[in-house]
Length: 66
Image (cartoon, rainbow, N blue to C red; front, side, top):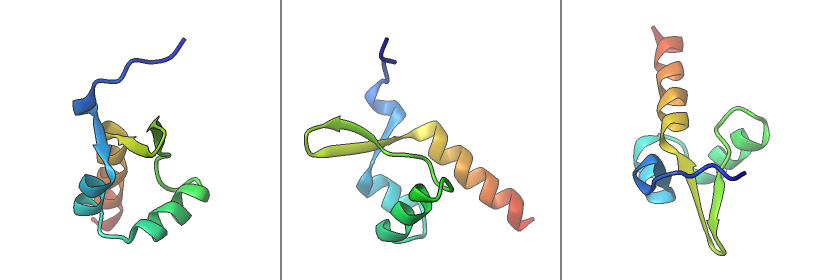
């Protein structure tokens, strides 16, 4: 059974780019290493990230800094 995700719960690449201070290529490397949330395919030529996963990842980075 597929999980239903509301569009407001997703972040497209431009929004991720604005929130995360790394290049997209670096984020893809981190994703491949299991260190960044995985993209979800939402269309033939479109991917998105689950907002809660990105927010949690950012919060963990902030905790590491303090």
